Length: 416
Image (cartoon, rainbow, N blue to C red; front, side, top):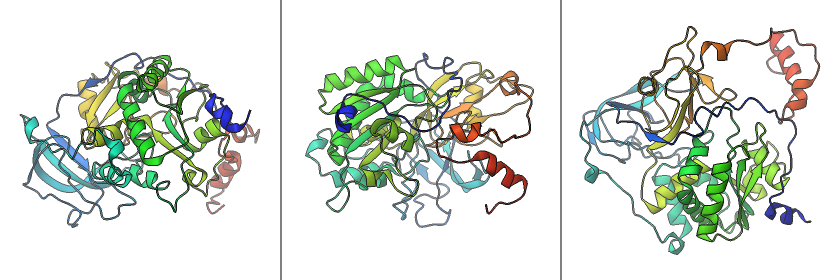
């Protein structure tokens, strides 16, 4: 079989290293998504300076749902930020955000109206017949609706797509929709595939119209049988050609874009190159859902599903949360029981980081709030000196040599 025949048959290649940690997804994988009651206040990170001409509101302004708060000039790095709810701007200042640094960032603080008027909400033009629309028009709408990557660093979705649009750009050979969700505990992508498979397929159709890929793969790990079945059924219902679900074995970090490309295509993208140069575009399933919402419904990206889990939370959930909602609001709503050693982690146990405070807002990249109990944080084995056994280098998919890095750090050789 040729490589293309293997891809179309769902063959799975492999990448170097990787591990199989405890999944701990049973807390939320079978719990349907719910909607968080409207908070009284939104603190929305805006990534622009308070006195900048990129900021579209000022203190005292009344804003309505889906209204743009910013219009960034650096279109290759940022997308507009919108408000999910109507209310009054009470403050524009530096506030703590959900970031590993613990630093503050410019935020717009909105006191939410007690009664929301759906008729006031702002919607962009809707393109249900998007196949008749110029892809550049759709790309502009994706940007204007604030769509950014929901599975990683929040990179602007339109910028990634533009890498393979145009006669002077490399053609997109394969579109990979990332539903692997290999991080332990997190199940928000699993739930969105289970519950919103038809809209994900609509988003795939939009991306196929923009990119014109030769083939499309929805990659899902084999610990998500319902998601696999529902996405397969939605593909058949839409009668999508050259599109399939490829089932991956459970392995961390299969969901990392370069590793996923290697699994699906056997192409190893160098770390100084972009996957678009190799004809591959990877989009998270949540991002694909948001693309469909932006194009077909004219809806800005103002909310996302967040997995709230861990043994310290009374009601583990996957919950739709307006961007700007305080993490503390989630914890109160879901009956958080503070352990002796409280720790609140944004993200999963592998890639997440401990929050300096629970009074930070949910942003577009917050896919999980992990609240471990004391027993989940206990060290099960004593820490031992490094004996350079090489096991860490053996499992590292990035081909790093961690024991050398460790020794260089201990010796203050930070340049090395």
